[in-house]
Length: 367
Image 1 (tube, rainbow, N blue to C red):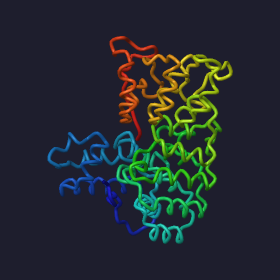
Image 2 (tube, rainbow, N blue to C red):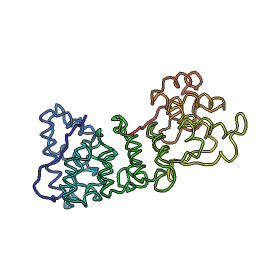
Image 3 (cartoon, helix red, strand yellow):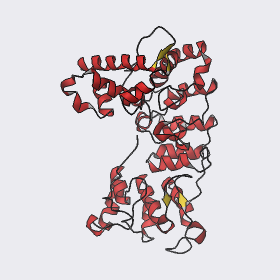
Image 4 (cartoon, rainbow, N blue to C red):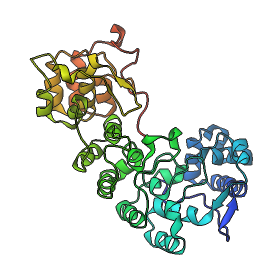
């Protein structure tokens, strides 16, 4: 939808102060809104400001706030507090080239300034060029697309020294902000069909498939956000599947079968406390079967769902990320055959839940 619409001012010098750069962007956004440019409306919606610009009429103050929010500043005052920071216009051109798949422009820019490949955005998300390929946690126009030649772009960046395991400050930073983790929770590469190929290319390029803390965070992320192809690509790339919940989500029925000591009971060594990553939500051991069922339902693993239903799971239990039941997850992921199986068996919302007061529908989803 975004195409190649970027708020990139034409400035004939390598460095510009942040205050000048985003002031120019605000003027560009106001002009785009006046022309009826659909992307301008989407930028306002992304900043939750579309109601302030009826009929595409956009005052400059609102445009400034939208641009500040788009760059992950709290507001215009926060942006101006960083106004003397420097924007490298060559980095911005390279970021646009990465997001649009313009390998010719990207090559020219990197040939002229090789250090750009390890440089970071001056804006609060602090992403590298490689991070931009994940289409997650950055400016709207750059985030809402994934070029068909994304793997070629990735390979060019890796060949020139990009760090596949670098983290950034999107969503508060931390180990979940590697390119791999951002990628497997991003809707736009999934929609474009580039997510799984990018995962495979990152794994082949040396990205740590089990996460930089060796806690399986990339796989947990792909599973939790419902990206089946990405999860399977991670496993092909070497990610380990070493617990009941992940095995169920990946559809490994044999591994799940041997986790049970008898018809209904998990083997004692399986009933250990798990987390979604080293610092993520705890998976309560008494609900491991229910969690396994929830994420098997999310990934449309019908034989797995059928098997786990024989273990007398409590269908009121919700998982800790989106507070969804198995039925809610199946509905959210449009797994109609799983919904048909679970609906007659799931107590009504009025019957309460074993773990939360959720209605059974995920309250959040992929970025």
